[in-house]
Amino acid sequence: MAELSPLRRRMIEDMTVRNLAPTTQRSYISAVARFSRFFGRSPDRLDLDDVRSFQVHLVSQGVSWGNLNQTVAALRFFYGVTLGHAEVPERIPYARAPRSLPEILSPEEVIRFLEAVAGFKCRIALATAYGAGLRASEVATLQISDIDSTRKLIRVRQGKGGRDRHAMLSDQLLGILRAYWRLTRPDPWLFPGRDRATPIHPTALNAACRSARAAAGLSKRVTVHTLRHSFATHLLEAGTDIRIIQVLLGHSHLSTTAPIPRSPAPRSSRRRARWTGLS
Image (cartoon, rainbow, N blue to C red; front, side, top):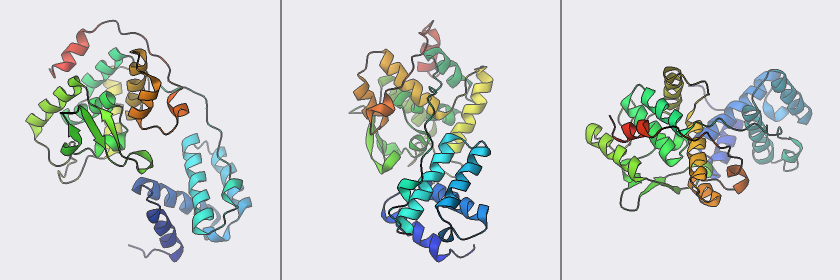
């Protein structure tokens, strides 16, 4: 393994002392490295004009809004914190957020989707993502000790922003998890990877989503985040106060929770009953 440069080591240390998540650290380092390679120079020798040129290049390449703003966040951190140029970050603008609404599955589509998931472990993990409104990384790192059957809560450790929170645990989901535990006896990770000493990787969950979507014949794009949005929408349709949904999702601001579209009403409850029974 190549030795880290002093500049990269300093940036990693800056992120570590600020308790940035490991995934955030990797994405920031990767973004600054791409910026450096684009110009063929060390990033501390590049200025705001270079940043602007790089942003124009990314837009011309059709980079998604999310990836573009992740790069902006990385460069703002690099210049403002690692290089100590406090005046620079505000001069590196974020891209304007698109106004498109997320895809939402109806309750029946959720049933079709979950029944089409090939692997038992991935099926239960994705059911947990939907049933508790969890992110892919949050589902992947659940431990047996995080399931509080007495209080009907799931403890989410170090969610987005490094915050712990509790998610809801319905009777239906608890029954599913108990059946799964009796069959597989996982420990300590609720959803272990191939090596049982490590958790399943979030990419495996999204890969399972892609396969299940095709198998279920759904035209909508489905990711773990689609299940999370669907969970929130179905709670809203059931009359749950949006401020409660905000807490369950772990959103810092209500405006993040608010733009939830409504899904079509289910036509039948028979498929939901089959799923409940784990048949």
